Length: 289
Image (cartoon, rainbow, N blue to C red; front, side, top):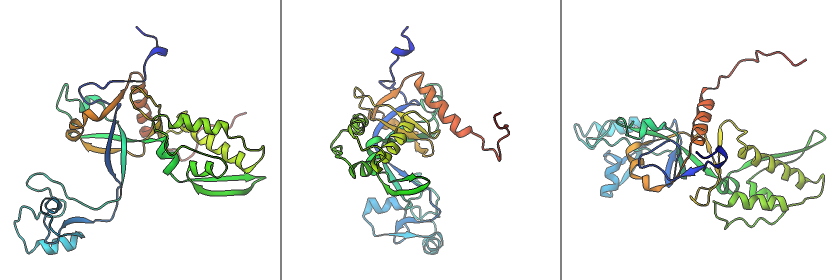
């Protein structure tokens, strides 16, 4: 039996779906919204009909759609709002969304594998945000204070902040080795002591170190592995997405790796810890002596 220090972080996935499976495949991740925008043909047929026939389309509110539907009683393609069609198609709506390129299965293996019993209809996945995407596209606030006064306040990407003071040739760097390349640039960057650039470098290092050390309870760091093509990044426990298990089963060949035990159990326990934490109205402890 190998020692814990010799245990691999990733391995080839099993034939069935499992918690910790990492996919590389573009998936549209909708963002919940209170605005109701129903996508149908101009004469109120289901949205799928628009794509099949090239029919003119329109975005309806519920009242507008119901008004049009009164002229077409009993039509199978003109269902009531949010009622599935005869071939089990749900309503099509217009919502804001992200396009994710990597994701990890969060559902328990027993719920989705189909090995012992019929799998659940939906599987919970978590987007994997790569460090390349995080550093180049996510706008972050950064504030520097001196003697209690704010001397610098700006919103920018991490690469945007670094590029203000030093060369940052990372645009063409592959996402699998991106974090290592970023570390090299930060280590070589030597701003003068007590300078603004020194403060910004410190803030950037602190942010990256907190992510890679799992200091944020809602983020789980994913270490890169060039053998499997896994990029450095993180899973965000505030971004759970449900996707039909049947669809994931068809995408199994797009898995690039799965997380090995005991790291998979660690990933699972951190999800559970985040979801089960209890907010208290005040601290029931006493001050230290």
